[in-house]
Length: 261
Ligand SMILES: *[C@@H]1O[C@H](CO)[C@@H](O)[C@H](O)[C@H]1NC(C)=O
Ligand SMILES: *[C@@H]1O[C@H](CO)[C@@H](O)[C@H](O)[C@H]1NC(C)=O
Image 1 (cartoon, rainbow, N blue to C red):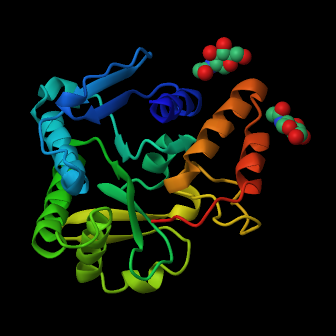
Image 2 (image 1 turned 180 degrees about the vertical axis):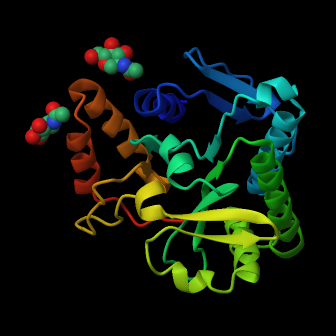
């Protein structure tokens, strides 16, 4: 709950006009007393072994619900970004929808042979076209996950399925993943934008004393695995100093144990 609380705080600082919608298991029964924040229970199987599969299903259900909304409401476009809750938003992500104006959905990539795509960040253009195609894309990933990767590590099946879908349609992607520059590709009529993790899904270096630097224009910091405490420390420093650069220095200077996926 502390992580979730801080997750929302960072969004309210970095993108004050956005709404936070927390997708959750109806059985979890918690509430969040924060402005512009709602909890949206979605029926499903949230058992440990099914969690990553359920996450994709929840995203699909969420997008279906948006499509069913009254057409009048869709005239006012809201873009959507699905993220893990262990991230700190330090930039305004609304800019990607303007900077790159023709994608339906966006994913983040890194130079990792087996898992080039991280599932912790999926942006969806809020037009009915964008929502429809993002939903169809996720359904294809879900299909691949349930037919090919159910036996894969419980935590990684979704990322393996994502990579499989992308690589099977875009043969040039593997080469592009080795350089941290945005690119896009057409996957069965869905225009997918690939954004470098380096800027949009950056994970602090692992292992004490490691120093790989940090891009100055980092937008999203992802506190994977054992880095959660660092997320709390970062917020505390930011809240007491209002100095983002100091906070990023704290993150960069803090070596963590090896635990990355
Ligand atoms: C930030 O710190 C102040 C104390 O300096 C505290 O009152 C406030 O609740 C904190 N804000 C958040 C969002 O944690
Ligand atoms: C943040 O702190 C650094 C010193 O650590 C200082 O140079 C910088 O001007 C500060 N930035 C703001 C916006 O206050």
